[in-house]
Picture 1: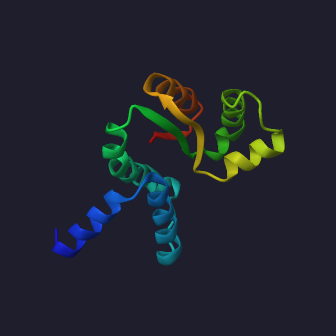
Picture 2: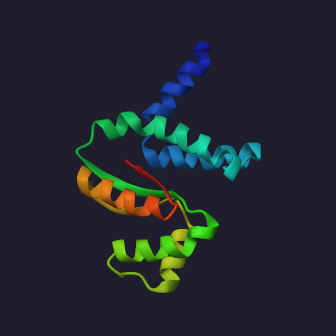
Length: 130
């Protein structure tokens, strides 16, 4: 790895999760690439790697939905609605899941975060704990 790319990688590691997400969106726009189904798992792996150190230091977590497969949207919406204790109208819920990534729960214990993650992943959603 060159010195320049090493410096860039260190700067990326210093970003918080939301800043990293914004960076990914900007890279997609500037270079006209997208996180399509073909490469979304690779994008997810990279994001997971980038936030691993941040997560390891936390005792409490935010549960973030990254992606929902189009064919699993309704089942995921129902799960999200239950997790949010039905505080959103159907229109708000639709907007919520169409504007991913979204934080579904803030500052919860590891056990609670893992349970929420499991529930969402069973519907096909891609979820991270940050």
